[in-house]
Length: 301
Image: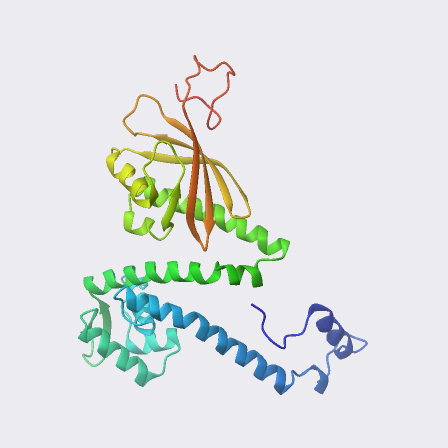
């Protein structure tokens, strides 16, 4: 997304040369001050961007039964403070919210049971704001909803056309996709966090594997049926465009041999939408004709 009215690099260099004197000093010159038109263009674009992001976030939060976005921001700030208790003044400073507005937000969150007020023991005049168990669950749920919504927004086809066109941003996108797959696999296979994994796998997930039942439910069902000792390790991982290939090892699944896999996934709008795999039983050193391990730099036996 481009911000209207910002000067380009060449223009900035020319402005810098024009404003520097012989010894490098920079006298005040009217030509270096952005025009009102440029300033209003920047402000208008920022407001438009804020509206375009906030509206879908508010919609998704409402559908998921979460508090509105502004209250979620307050909950998140309190939740992430950990054992450090925050006062309303500290909250309004951190979130840049006016005092009266913060007071109303705290009142509503307290009424809904998400937070509680605690008096400062020293003077009994100032309140601390403490999150409840209900508030902590609501904050975690809202974070999952917001994370999925933001991925959907920033990795939509329209955004990709407008933003991910240069070689640099394409490489950044591929690096992000690799990190996304690693986090997704760890969340599902190692942490067994099925609610968290829903953020990474599309509800319309397409499964090409001969070993797994169709869809996201088939994959989750397979993992639920395997022992708690299941472990996934990733090795080499490569990405090209929307596709990621991860070389990995599955162990602790209750079968005689570990699995060495090449998992191929397609990513769309920030979630995994399609999958293929190639699976082999891991060979021991005694049975390996190549004399080299199938995964990593050493044999396990």
